[in-house]
Length: 264
Image (cartoon, rainbow, N blue to C red):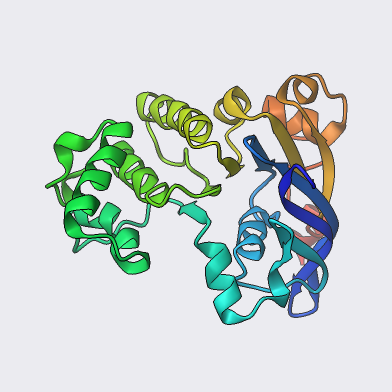
């Protein structure tokens, strides 16, 4: 039996005839934190959508716990999603629901648990992210970091086997970023889950990831442990990891000769 809970095999995907991914291969082992990194527009979030069955690959396949996602029926897709948690970019809390009701939402929608048990579980999840005392707050009363932590409590509400994070550190102050970073690692280990992080924040991601994939030009350009990638001499990886303004990813987008364009 494979030790990988998610496998991406020779996957290609595109929009309107333009390929975004070209024969990508990735594996996500059980109980590990694995990151997908790359520049904006490289298709990182699209990979999460393919894993969740929102879209279908043009070629190849995504397997979740041995099941080919795009071959599943509607019921089969929902059954697979029941084993997944998702932290959306910027949290995506329901603005008209309290913190408590946001975390309770998946429990009420997907289980037949009595309200008394839901109450205990919601408070347990909120306590795990340090926000049990804020359970009556509305999302508008939360800071950005608090909102992200509530969204994290909601993502793990049903103790998923797979937790996906779409840019979990975006827009956070350094303290909130450190808190969320630690929570991702600790919750993954406590739940025995597999975490898949899409991010371009090198420092925070490298602190908690067991393995990292770099995606560029539709392909996996590099992969390995954070320690190995920090020492990489591959031009794209070196530029990305060290934040250099020029390299394989140029500062200037391709354009005609500047002088000729100005003078007509």
